[in-house]
Image (cartoon, rainbow, N blue to C red; front, side):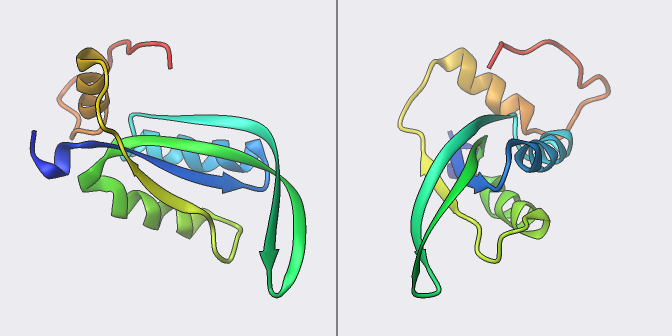
Length: 121
């Protein structure tokens, strides 16, 4: 497997599940990600501008390939309401071969018929 084809996860946070879904749908439609998972409720405690902050947020995990990670982060950042959104690329050490193949197919240029059912994710 070439370096650009290695699967990666991109972790990001959003102010709401709705905001994450809007961005997630766009990147999946563009085939920049095979899938996004949105976890709708978490509490974040962090330091920002010298003060302690606490906010409700949603997590989005983006499933893509290494070669698209930079473009995915650019697309997310361009659509994000945060000044400095969390964007972390996490390498995938291994996975079920059929699932990894599905992930790579989902981020490939579409053929004449890009349809087909994928696994429930």
